[in-house]
Length: 345
Image (cartoon, rainbow, N blue to C red; front, side, top):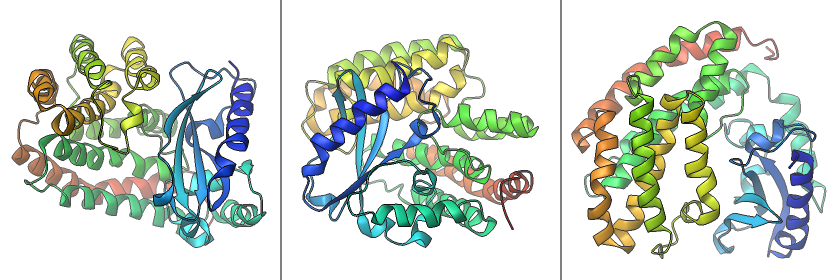
């Protein structure tokens, strides 16, 4: 299916479903779909991210991943207060690229367009690029600060993993690239290759612990993850924010997407999402099916062992290594900004 056709389906879903929400203000494209031309194919392992702007996200029904006419949509909410000020958007590394995009799915009152115009006009100003990089750095530190031993082990893994993985976003934001989620390591490698700094990439892999990961190892971990994933689908009850990812429709993103990375020779780049998905599955088991948590724990720990994580102490030590690396990372972000011609002032 071409991306333009998929967009049309997404627009219809918004018009028919989302527009009925209380406090609905409009809808935006989010993530990689922003940069895909209408006549390009939408990969089977890709979904379309949509952000619904509402007054109160907490009062809305959970959506997450939903299929519509063969297109997998990943729907999230953002409060109107979060985008009502252009300055707030411009310093938000996740929302700024979304509002930079001139195409808005729906804007009944025309208010989003006014914000979008201001964001697009100032998106590439250096002061805002620097603030977005700093906001990612601060979020890294917050993630490691949440490594509380009272939390379940899978939650700790997620906190450490996403804190470590945000190092890629610092550089992607500096280069005005989309700070993608699942393919963040592939995206940052491509950026560094484009800028002639591919030698920096090894540091990011080292911090994640996957430099020596082989294709055979990645394939084995994907196989055990697939078994756990399928076991989790029917037992999930707790309304986790990621619950819709661990579903049959979500399988083609979480598992097939990882398989595509491995088969294309990007097995090291697949590690981030393998760990993220395994931790989410184990979190489901911990809360909703404890007997399955124990059954599938060996595969989870084998994956973690291969990246050097066996305990909370390892995560704390490795988080400290990331924090010690941050000054160098921010210096490299400045270099990327210097070499990005679109950045102004």
